[in-house]
Length: 374
Image (cartoon, rainbow, N blue to C red):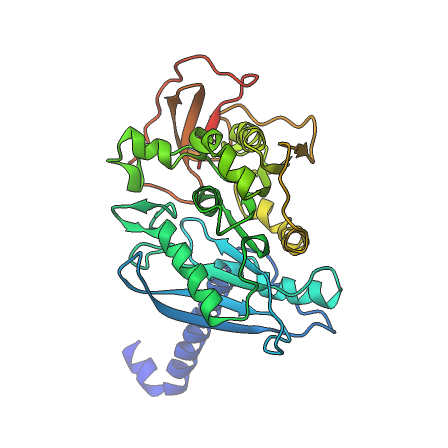
């Protein structure tokens, strides 16, 4: 065999070339899959104009270090016009680039602008990773692992300083999926003078003693559980009105928590719309609502925020959440939280070895709905 190979260098070269081509092809396939999670990339429409991607590095007072975030400037930026801003928080595992590769938010916006379905906005993608790890879990909160909620406020101030923004709360939307949805809700409610509009995609609203909150006191958990503290914000919301759209997949372990949170925010004076859609806790669900979320952000920043009488509206009346613990998440455990039973799960993230199932204790309220988190 050695003698044959030595006498046929062309064969060796062909084998090597074939192997390299195969490896390159496999890498390209998996890189494409990782970037798009099996979804076809969104193509520019013929009359759409591309905007500009910017990577910003700045010093964050909250994190006490140089930090970064991504920005997408709309087509036509730089003509003296000022723009509303749409802040999008990623989940875990995740990184800011998911809004490029998987969600295609910039291309979607450019297409919608070309169709006159939304007005131009500045898109901002903060980086909530601890130590740059896509598998970290900051919860977008202020914890011993870093003050990531305050970092988002640092980003807002830097964006307003650096870009042509409309620098007021009515013209800012904060949104996110899973961990990012929780973070967006928690950050908005703790910074009502900064943000006026909220979108929560498959969020959860109660913190438990796990991950970056593993050693937190009960007071800290309560202070980072929107469902527990939102009732204390009636006066603040009356002064700084809130508009929120919240959705979740009905087969998601988070789904029983949505309506109680929507009701509590509305009771505190928020203008709230919510929906329970078919699906679980994954990009199959989120991907189908990205264009509507962009259009909604555009509409919301075009309408002044007004004090609400606590209005609440369901886009999917009659749709009920799946019973807690029966959703599409893994590593679930049940803990009791006062009036609510909370299923704590690893959804788009996996916290290895941290989740153990407990039996549900206590009586559920709110028509038998529990609360859950991802």
